[in-house]
Image (cartoon, rainbow, N blue to C red; front, side):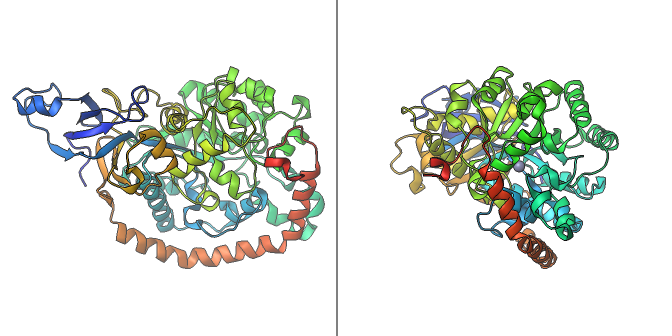
Length: 521
Ligand SMILES: [Zn+2]
């Protein structure tokens, strides 16, 4: 397959500009040279046809032309929180509380996967992302048991399909049922060994840190669209020693850090119970350890107190909301409006395939805009334009690719999507921003360009064989369905105990409520 086209001219489309007319964007021609946007100019085609040239063309005609009449060009979306390890488990679970879901979905609960499965699931998840206009995916991927060869299979799959990826191996070095409130008290001893899955570690902190350091440094720059990040799964499942070392590594190597925080009521209660010295605040703990700053990306942040929201804003740390997953795992509604009022510019993630269960940024943007209004307040943000900023420029900040992706402008990487405005989502065409956020579902995503390379053209994948991928997935499911059955049977056996622990966690006062009506009225 060809890498980036030498030059590509997209003619006559309307171009979404965050700072321009977001209802009726002006038409412009977009010239791409290699991996970069060289020009966004209204009359470029006419000037070229009249004999003028552009420096990026070097006197030659454009290598390829895409006609974009009745089309809208939008910056590619950044899926700022995602895990490729359970791509094949979409649709396997009903809405269950997060702690039980973890037992069903996390890799340490399963036997090691085949490399055919790793490749197939990575390609499938990336393809689903591309189809909903996602051009960058941040993958906090658990590889268990840890295997460098497995990581290379995943990276090669990302390289092959052509999506941009920020890859963060997900790690933890603190284990045990005590990390989930009341599990060690209510789950009978004979089942306790089944609970190590979500708390599963990969070794002591020194050994684990050295491994992560070596793996990331050896592979950085190996694939042109893959950058690296650090992924301690959560503050409570990482030792202070590991977090302090990761903070130093993030600083020395300029890497973003991703972690889960205050996602569910139970995980927030764990913070309250385990970090009394910090008044139960994981935010204060992260600050003390040197991680709270612009490189830190906090996924979820549902159960945050007002002073924690202020601390996050003051530190210019980033927050990534994942409303689809929070609904599926009964984790509550993040205080979106409060974060916006505090000056935080959030990004958006589609989270796991087994808890959202869709890599669809349109659904996520709509949920973000709607749930932002779930807490009584005067009319106001988030507006549709806020949702689009969250899915693009704010996502770029979480990847530390600010100024490179997230907008269609000269000098930016050529990551953009072409939307078909003849699709009924846009008929009549009243507002680009509002119809992208409130109406479109992904159906009108016609063409997707990443790094100057056409990965999807007129709805067809151009970098992989889609039929062969479907077959590879079906082949893998023969084994995976058997493994899933065994995993789910184990969780079902413990169901009454897990529910008892969840109810006890629910009864504790943690100083904040994040359910509509708090479930108590
Ligand atoms: Zn996650």
